[in-house]
Length: 494
Image 1: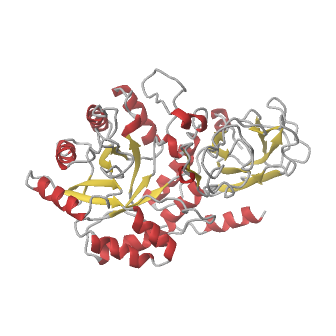
Image 2 (image 1 turned 135 degrees about the horizontal axis):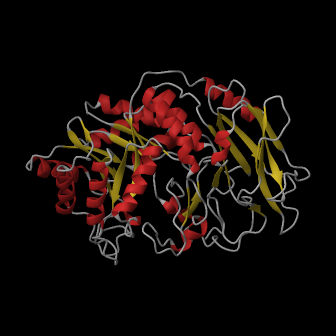
Image 3 (image 1 turned 30 degrees about the vertical axis):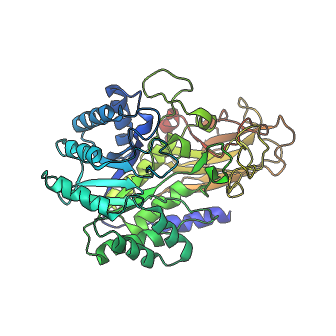
């Protein structure tokens, strides 16, 4: 397949480079109200197993909403205490899209310097707090609404307390201009001339912005270079994300959109490793449920256990849609990024992801925007994407069936067949939905995976009961389910 050939070229481009870096993941505190100390322990252990070195704890203003969010302070303390005991880093982070002039802050009581400086000052006393060049690293989501004077005054206030900080903000307007107008060096330079008080930069736009093409590293390289050109100390923080889909189910078309993400988790990591080589990688989110960027285990719907969260309409495209297998895939690339060498394949890992209905399906819910649908809904391919890093020497077939209990192929199903013999790096493949799917409103597809020892057509492993792809859909869902073969697949010796 042409797709597979392109992937082979990309893999061969992953040359060895000696480089070490830090991997963080945004943790949205807005979803931590039910967390206990044990919940933090579980999350941090899971993140560490995926190669993540720390959380950027993204706080929101406690009094911006009708609901009092001052409980965040106690959750932050718990996170620091657990992280300190588990050799895990914490970076204070602030969502500064909230402002007294914005709709998301109806009370008008947004960020104030006293509250933020107190959180940072408290962090300075914690062993888990991450430092860059002997200063506490601070990241923000936005900041342009507050201006450089706010950052300057914050630095001065903390310096008088003996606390030095390094500020690496994300500011959408500069990044969007750099992507849109094709002069990223100019826009990156403007960010640093307009904000003399910032030290580094965080580019959170880890996906192509409303265009159907893979994101290059041109913008990342421009902002990384601008830090040096402006004489700042950094760091440059580059975001990676497995996906982007949000559906707020409002009358505003911009509130419901998907970005081109089919193979984003794969090629964005490739850009980190072979091109930009940033100081720090930040995974866009551990638990941002509404944007479909999450890696954490999905909480149960209407749950009451620690870690549960009420998602409202967004629960329609989150509950039951698991992304945890992307952590396995990510752990390969975090190791590659930190060491500069392609990791040896020691396990049998096969990850595959797909959306659960066609992109043009007429669903019963989730189409409440004024435009009548999800923005960019034509971007994704109706396909299953397969990532394989398999130690055993086997041959693998992936195709569609109609029955979760039978290995029979659906008539007319395409099929991907590949070998892992002499495999030295991950392989990526695409299996398109059958052209005639759906035949009727009750038609259903199950991705089937069959594994055979190399050169012996004797079935060694199979999986038929993946989450189905259906003709009928209750909610317009562009959030993919991420599947993997079971732990017993790792026992195969080939």
